[in-house]
Each structure stands twice: as C-alpha cells, then as structure tokens.
Image 1 (cartoon, rainbow, N blue to C red):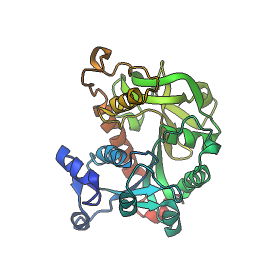
Image 2: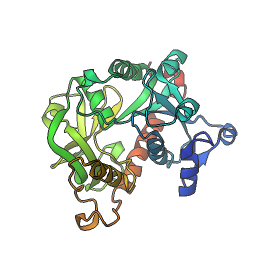
Image 3: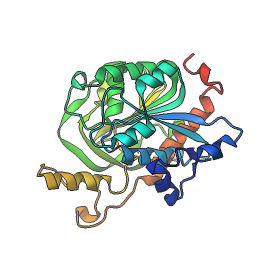
Image 4: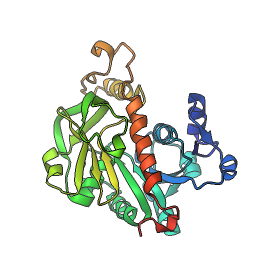
Amino acid sequence: MPIKIPENLPAYDVLTHEGVMVMSENQASRQDIRPLRIALLNLMPRKIQTEIQFSRLIGATPLQIELTLIRMSDHQSKTTAAEHMTSFYRPFNEVAESGEKFDGLIITGAPIEHLPFEEVTYWDELRQIMDWTQTHVHSTFGVCWGGMAMIYHLHGINKRMLDAKAFGCFRHDNLVPASPYLRGFSDNFIIPVSRWTEIKQKDVDANADLKTLLGSSEVGPCLIKDAKHRALYIFNHFEYDSDTLKQEYDRDVSDGTPINVPQNYYPDDDPSQPPLNRWRSHAHLLYGNWVNQIYQTTPYDLNEIGA
C-alpha cells in the first residue's frame, strides 16, 4: 500500500518519479481500511528535503499511511516559503486542541546541538509535545537531536559535546538481532553520522527502561528502545539521501568553516568522486519494521491510543 500525501506537496512528484507508491485523497477514500496515521514534527531548516526523506521510508511498506506534517506553534521557518508552511503544516497547538491521536510520530533533528536544551526557543512547547505523545501517540521515533531531546526530557540523560564532529559513514553492530525492529538486519552495517554531540552508553546502561539495539565502537549508541514510553531514539541518519553529507561538507567548505572530509563516504575519501550509498537497504528495513510494529500493536480504534 502507498503513503497518502497531498498531490501538490513537492514530495508527491519526487516519490512518484522514484517509483514509491503514493496515493491521493480521492484514491485513499475508495479503500475500505483504516490507514495508519503518522505525523512528522519537522524541526529541520530544509523542510521539503526532510519531508521527502521520511515519506520515502515510511511509504515503502505494504500499509497505507496517512502523513500529517506538524510544526511548532510559534516558531516560524526562515528557510522554507511561508506559503508551503501554511499549505501543508499544522501548528501543534491546533493538533493538540483537536484531540486527535496518531499511530506514530517522528520528531526530527535540528541544527542546534551546541545549545543547552533549556536555551532552545521552543523548548517549553517541545516538552509539552513529548508529554502529549504519552496519551495521544502509540509509538514515537526521535531522530538525532530529536532523540536526544526525548531521552533528556523523559529520562534526564543529557547529551555530551564531542571534541570533534562525528562526520561520515560509520560501521555499527546489531546488538539485539531478535528485536522486531531489526528484522532482516546484517550483523554490522554502515550508517551516516553528522553530529557534535553524543549519548554515553554508560548513561543508557544505568537506566533499566532503556535498551541499546544498534551501536558503534567509534560513535557510541545509535538506536535505543524505550519500552516504557513506547519510543525509539536514533542518533544517526538512515534517512539521509546519497548526497546529504556531501551537501553539508560543500556548505562548510564554501563558508570557510573548518570541516574534515566525511569518513568512509567518498570512494578513497576523495571528495571529487561521487559518494556511494551503502545504507539505503537498512534504512528501509528499520522504518519498515517500525511501521509494521505499529500496525501489529496499535488499537484499531484511535480513541484507545494512550488509554
């Protein structure tokens, strides 16, 4: 089954061209099933790129997905056209007031790693959203900074600054092969990483409610399961396009920002060569497994979510 998104959302044409199954509102209304309602709280500056990346992954399963785009209520995007935001995004306060419930929610990263959480302008509202998930969302997926924000708010585990940016493609280990979220995963594999902060494994181990599913000897824990809060936290970027790290590297070089060539990304670490995507299959596995777990465990009656 496809993902249901508006026909005039930029992701619709992009994904259709790639062969991803997408569905219009009229097509979806003719199917006598309940689609999974998944929301994306998009905190990234390049909103359209992020919409496409996550729609591509959650739209590749055999299930019908109804995607809702959410933004912070009082934080205006400076990098995405106001018309796009008005047309496709709903402010969180409107969603909360409606009483709607969702089978899944993805909270993206944000390029504000250097700030303490309490200094983020929308921190109070984000805390409200994370609390709201406990009664209105069946499964929440925090990505990169979004995952670090969740594990800090819900468990008091703070991010720690790295001496140098973890930047490139790093090998990770499958630590819990029997996990339903890791069905089909290899024993080890490559994941793109781009962050200045980390979560320490010892802090995770000290909390009985948390379980590390994927980890790296170089860049630490990657995917953490939080059964108590029906959540997953991932600190790296399976959703990245083939050239996303290249875009970040080229931007920093152009701006004169000191940056190392992303590790293990370009052939022979040569930025003049096109990068190779060696994580795409595992990206689809992870998000497909997440969607499948939601389908297997969420109530058919949305009103029962969080009860």
